[in-house]
Image (cartoon, rainbow, N blue to C red):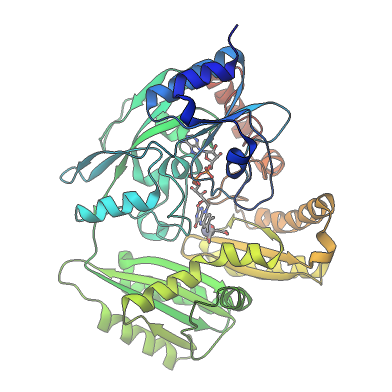
Length: 469
Ligand code: FAD
Ligand code: MLT
Ligand code: ZN
C-alpha cells in the first residue's frame, strides 16, 4: 500500500509538501519558543478541496493533524509535540479575499489570509475590520477564529466571536461543511460556528470565514497617560466612559517596569512621556462623521490632571507619534521574550476587580519569589490583564526546573483569579500549556460536554491531539 506521505504528495503536489527538517524548522517551534516538536511533514494546501483530501488520508490512516495559521499563538497549540507522528497543515497559501459586500458590511475570506490583509482590504472598501493584535502582520484569520482572539479593540467591537458570521471547515472525516452564511440573524437551532470559534484546531480545519465589517471612524485620537496607581487607572476608565461611551475603542494599561523594559529593549522607540508614573494608560477615542472629539478629550485630560488623577498625558499630534505609542504597547511580547525566563498569564476578572487582582497576584508572587520581577500589561477595559513574572536566568537553565517554578507561579495567580471569580484564559486559549489548569478549574459539567463534543466530531482523535483537551 502506498505510504501516507506519498499519497499526501499526490494530494497537494511535491512543491507544497515539506519533509526536510530544515524546511520544517519554522513550523515545529512555537512563538514563545517553549515547544520544539517534529512533524511527519508540513502540508501547504492551496484550496479547501486539497485540505479535505489531506484530512481524508489522515483519517484513513489514523494520522494526527495539527492545523497551523501564522504560528503566533501563545499556548503551543500549533506545534506538533508528542510521540504520535503528525502532519502540520499550514493554511499560508490560502489567502484569497473571496467576496466584499459593503452594503451587507461583510467580507468573505480564505482562512489563511493574514489579519493585516483583511484590515487593508476593509480599508480599501471604506470599511473597518476592527480586530487588532500585536501579531496582526503574521497571524491568520483562521488562527484568530480558532483561538477566539481578543486584542486591543474588544472594548468597542468585541472579540473574534462577535465578528464572525459564517465559517467553512473541513471536518475530521474529510467532509467540507459550508457554513459561509452572511446573515446577522439565523435562528435555526444550535449554531455550529460557535463551536469552531475557540476550538483551537480540535474539531476541524477552518478554511474560510464570513466576517462582520464596521463603519470606519473619521477621527481617531491616541492618548498615553501616566498615573500613580492601578486604582487611578480604573477611576479614569469609569470617568472616560461617562463622557465618551462607545467612542472609546481602546483602553490598555501597562505597569512602569514593563514600560521601561519595552523602551530599553527597543532602541527605536521614543519615550513620549515627560512625567512618569507607576502605570500608563494607552487610549484610543474615535469620532464618526463630522464629530471631532479632540477638544473634549483635551478638556477631559486637563481636568483630570488638575485634580491629580493623571500625572501627565500626551495626545499624539501626528501619525508617527500615534504609531510610536502603539508600538510601545505592542512590543511587550518581544520585550518579555528577550528578558528571559518569563511566566505569563492571561487572566480576566470583572473589570471592577482588576486592582485587587493586581495587588494580590503581585503580593503572592513576590512573597514566594522575592527574586522575581512582576510586570503587568493588558486590556484593562475588558478586565483582561497579563501578569508576567520574570525569574533570574540562573534559576531556570534546566527546562524541568523552569516548568516546576512556572507551575508554582501559576498556582499563586490562579488562586487569586479563582477568588475573584475570573478566568485563567481570557484570550490566548488553552493550547498545550494550560491543559492541566483547564482540567483543574473548568466546571466539571462543562468539561464533560466538551469531551463529549470532541468525541462526536473526532472519534479517532486525529485533530490536534494534546491541545485543549
Ligand atoms: P496559530 O498560532 O497558528 O494557531 C493557534 C491555534 O489555532 C492552534 O491550536 C492551531 O491548531 C489553531 N489553528 C490555526 N489555524 C487554524 C485553522 N485554520 N483551523 C483550525 N485551527 C486552526 N492574542 C490575543 O488574543 N490578543 C492579543 O492581544 C495578542 N497579541 C499578541 C501579540 C504578539 C506579538 C504575539 C506574538 C501574539 C499575540 N497574540 C494575541 C496571540 C496570537 O497572535 C493569537 O492567538 C492569534 O489568534 C493566533 O493566530 P495564528 O494564525 O498565529 O494561529
Ligand atoms: C498582549 O496583550 O500584548 C498579548 O496578549 C500578548 C502577550 O500577552 O504577550
Ligand atoms: Zn493580550
